[in-house]
Length: 290
Ligand code: NAD
Image (cartoon, rainbow, N blue to C red):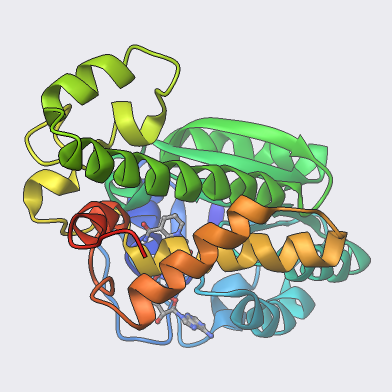
């Protein structure tokens, strides 16, 4: 396939590289100077999108996605797929999809889980909203860039799945960290705590797969001085998107809201910036009841 790839940062660059090494003809564009083996660089987003079967975007936020969509939608050929893999607000995802559909394109929102490691290894999970025919066409590309793609329904539903998943993740990470800090104060050994909880009803991905206590459970960023991993500021971005969506949909999400406030405090007022989101544990260790 002829593919245009716009937004070649930490995630986009390895995803584009995997598509190129699988034999697809990839033309890329980024605001920054970028060079990727096997990817031809264009001078503009419009140039990268012209004449392509699929145009993939991997951008920082909904506002930038909307501005790139304004540049690429008018030049894309009818029947081509506009595949946005960024994590953005549901409203922007739906607005861009409507604009693309109006122009005769097949639109998909397909945010990912799996981080930069998954992007490099080609093991991402795609949560996909939008056109069924577009999903069939893009499946071949999902198979190269990832290990699983779930079609979640109409446009915006991929973003909805992503922010709901990450709201659960943010809240379970916080409570796992506060439980470890409580266990410390009660004199309970961390390994014993892990052995019990990971096989009891308190288990979760945060405990079992990404344990925030160093030296306990499988290897995780906690074992690497909390270098991300998944940075606390990216978790904050996703929790804010969840709160924005909850407000727009009039949904009651008190724990999501509390998680959002705590990560905002951690990143903006404390030492959370640049650290993994599981560094909430050393944060709680330092604190008493207040
Ligand atoms: P990044 O900042 O490394 O990359 C974004 C790229 O977009 C940059 O290279 C930037 O120069 C480029 N860009 C910005 N404006 C542009 C424009 N107008 N035209 C062309 N290029 C432009 O970010 P990232 O870590 O690659 O994340 C990309 C998206 O993936 C985000 O929405 C993020 O939330 C999501 N995501 C990231 C991770 C992760 O672990 N990094 C995991 C899952 C999802």
